[in-house]
Image (cartoon, rainbow over all chains, first blue to last red; front, top):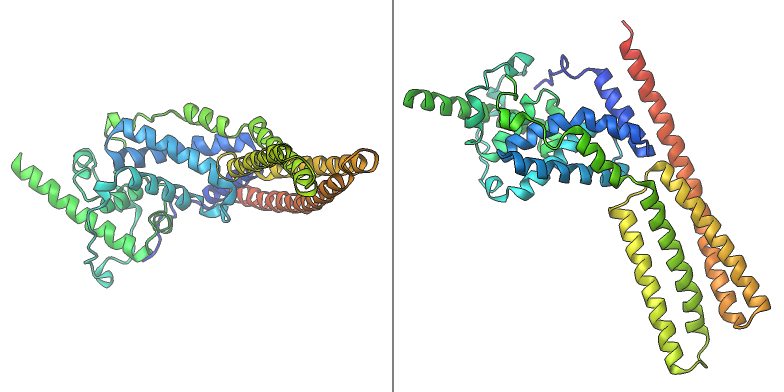
Length: 191
Length: 172
């Protein structure tokens, strides 16, 4: 599968993230402020969808940033900051939402049958009805779907954050959209 | 598709400014240097009192017991300060240089001071032993200072490279 999010993730974005992370590792306070300004809103959107509860998400986001500040000097590859950050966020979410994440995962898709590339158009779906449905998805599928629709992460970043291969990200994304579509269809029929 | 459709979940909390304030507390240089100072002071007490404890078997039992307790307390504080600096108040590149400089100065002064006490004062053997241990710490601090400087140089060079790529990407 091609990682075709390049229209959204430019080399300039990647270089700027790397520049900020290296500034933080040197101990530059301004770099920390800029990094937080850049990444706190998408991080919040992810945690809010993972928790489905604003108070819990607020608590988790503070926890994530405390961990990021403590662990940043040990990040060896600043260019991989995005995946690393969302990996921490995901672990915090898993820790706090143990029961939601305890649902077993079944990898049933045949990777060869999945479309070869995911394009930016794939992210243009109406989420107005989707917000409530998202909460009914199993946690692992919702994770991948929310990270994808943040528009901030490449598939490689999502794979790093979720600690699974890119192919598995693709299959979970496929299954999540499938489940979501089925849920939305059944909700539509009932209403 | 956007993820901005749910008002309750889209009002970012805590705000960016709140998180920046939270991070500023964790990034306080004063707190870091405070723990570095605590580490060095407790190591100094542990080596000085521990040397007396180990090299003066003729002291009364109560005195030896008190010296042992003080040494254990100093070791406890050293372990605590070390743990905080590894997990809670971690040292960033430039902090490491400052901390290593402090450690080098502190250990050198302590080694010379204890050697002087051994030469002119009482308890010569104990003080010489403590001076030797602190001289060892001074050498370790010197190695750490060199490593910290190299680390800062590497980070700075990589940052310049990232800056160049940012500037290059801005060109048409």
